[in-house]
Length: 401
Ligand SMILES: *Cc1c(COP(=O)(O)O)cnc(C)c1O
Image (cartoon, rainbow, N blue to C red; front, side):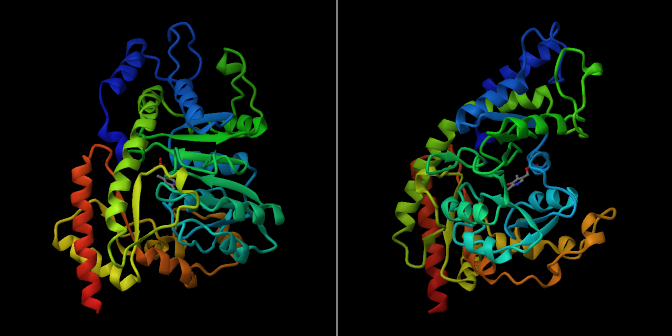
């Protein structure tokens, strides 16, 4: 979680600006706020890094996904293709929008593949909620072909891929709308926060209203504003936005450090028998937050995890069994256990979630071990870690032989 490693005086200064005026609300109060607009500044910083025409900060990455779906016109009864490997918020957002998730296959990019999407399309498919996983990016050329051919709406959950790009375009800007998370574990944090992005003014205006009870934010009297649509409270506070401003300004520095350290790690591990890496659809667009190792098969990956644990090497995720990011751990979704009735309970799904068959995704995630890269490591520390990983893999491969 690189952003949190660099929390310091810059963050405290931005927060203090807000504490000086006491205006914790992002709208109105023009006089007493004395020109302090942290949510707007946060959005400006995100636009600078992504090149998005419009950015709108909200309370979390999860509410940013919900806003992106709503502003893209995805709602009750719409089938939405989702990956089985993502932070669960993606699937929750689809379900709570009243839409019906349909799980499709990922590939070695760790993201939905064009073929996976194509195979999951039914006459009811309205949209794809594509997730750019583990700091990397999906293979967009092929995916955009399928999206266009089938006239689908593309929404991008780039929750873990802020500052990643594909052939020069930032993740989040290929479809109708996209979003990033700034929770405590991401490349930059607001404490809690998310940012919605789009290049379409009408979509932006919908998102702006939807995430604040429908307010149109025209004029200076909030009580007398117009409400073009129904909305809800997904607002970010000025305190959180203040942290987001300082953190987002550090992203170029974090990314450069991560990429340098990742090269140290990969140069050593590329020499290790049995190690390969997740596919980066555009290596130049990597955000560098994760080193994603691919072992030859699931059994070798499991043995490698055992060896890493024995050697006391931490800081990695084995998503296949140990994390909340893969369908194997989502029994509540498979059984549609919810606090209250959802649209999917009324309409059903074309997929039986208890009998999902996603062999490619099982194979890919079974082989994957991800290390979070810490931007404060020295190159010596990164090299030492790489040698420990190599030793663990070597033992795991030998046990099999
Ligand atoms: C972190 C994350 C989210 C959720 O973001 P929060 O800010 O924690 O609500 C959504 N999607 C993906 C892919 C994520 O990694």
